[in-house]
Amino acid sequence: DVKVTQSSRYLVKRTGEKVFLECVQDMDHENMFWYRQDPGLGLRLIYFSYDVKMKEKGDIPEGYSVSREKKERFSLILESASTNQTSMYLCASSFSYEQYFGPGTRLTVT
Amino acid sequence: AQTVTQSQPEMSVQEAETVTLSCTYDTSESDYYLFWYKQPPSRQMILVIRQEAYKQQNATENRFSVNFQKAAKSFSLKISDSQLGDAAMYFCAYRSHYSIQGAQKLVFGQGTRLTINP
Image (tube, rainbow over all chains, first blue to last red; front, top):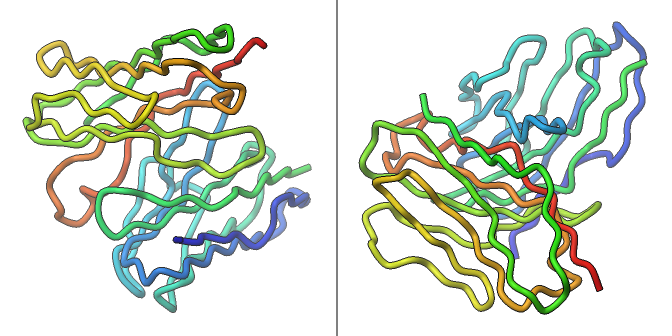
């Protein structure tokens, strides 16, 4: 079975802090994705990566950056957390059509 | 740009009955994939069913089936013999068929929260 893990289930940070969300997959997938999930808006793509060190902006990249130094790991970085970044963050990986999701990190910025 | 719309924020059904969740989408492409994903409370999102646009036959997976109407750009999910474990958030999603960089991303609808009444 494909396993996608995220470093934290719940995270509370203060405004202005730098925040790292980590995602690891164990199936050698080329593609990895970061989404944020908000009520009434569904999932929106922040960034994705199709190979090591390669990244592409999604639909809502502002305020975020990403890093992919190893194939299995994809990190989402909030350079200076703001209250409007309070959300559920989901990581996913894929090889072909199906995306496999992690359990999510619920981030609260106070 | 493609868009996906789920117009039912919440649905409920009695256990053992049938429920249909609606999804419409907008695209100018002729070849694509459509998916239904399920997100149970506090659990990971999993794929329920997928449909390739070039296939006329509707996809089925056990108690889950879809009604794919390409001309109408409609993709509904039917759950038969509803069970308590079907309670979840359901998301409809679109993906282009083309595998160029950037085309593998999913576009999601807003989600429908399904409640099963015992």
